[in-house]
Amino acid sequence: MRHLHTPHNRLRPWQRRATDACGALLLLTGAVWLALHYGRGDELPLSAEAWALRLHGAAAFAALFMLGVLAAAHVPHGWRATARGRGRPQRRWGLLLCGLAALLAASAYALYYFAPDNVRPALGGAHSAAGAAMALALWAHRRAGRRSLPS
Ligand code: HEM
Ligand code: HEM
Figure 1: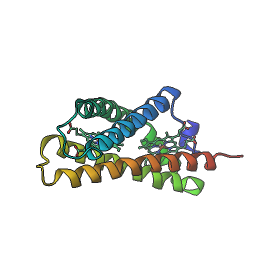
Figure 2: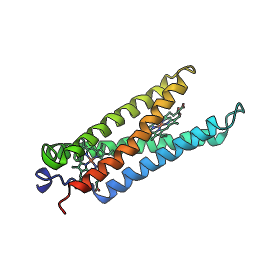
Figure 3: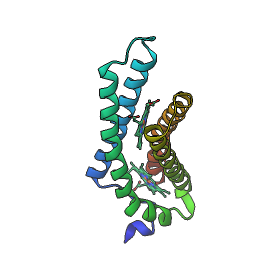
Figure 4: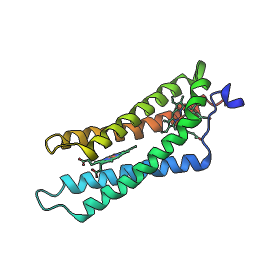
């Protein structure tokens, strides 16, 4: 069980591809929705806007499934592998990723089931900011992984 004793905790290629695809689709559909919604004054809602959110919702379900996949092995193995030494930054970025994922899921639930019209824009803004932060944290987490590899 080499990965328990070194910082190595690579994802399987399908897991990395699926996580990347979900993240890219969430960012893209979120950004398209923002551009359509805030970029066109007071006209009636466009069906393109509705379709952007439908796709966003589909990608969100897949992303939550992938977070579950990572929670089963990647997170606990990574946690043990980064207890000391060069893996520490990886652990901090990983923790941040878990926290942001929880914020995204909680704000998404509130957006879907509760958000009254007066809090919706602020909640949507916070949700989108957490999404953008997650993309940056994932990049940093990955970079930290490459750096902790022996040269
Ligand atoms: C406390 C939580 C976490 C810890 C301790 C952790 C630990 C690690 C470690 C040690 C690596 C380096 C792998 C290597 O270079 O061999 C890594 C890579 C990676 N982690 Fe995490 N991780 C955590 C959470 C997450 C989460 C929540 C995600 C996704 C949302 C994630 C996505 C990735 C990705 C995409 C890589 C690059 C893997 C590759 O290139 O194959 N990690 N993680
Ligand atoms: C695990 C990650 C994510 C989940 C589970 C998620 C889920 C959701 C859900 C359920 C909604 C409400 C849809 C509706 O009202 O019909 C939503 C709205 C939205 N999401 Fe996400 N999302 C995630 C990531 C992202 C990311 C990365 C962005 C990046 C820009 C983003 C931007 C938005 C925007 C702009 C809205 C519309 C806000 C509003 O209605 O005011 N989301 N998301």
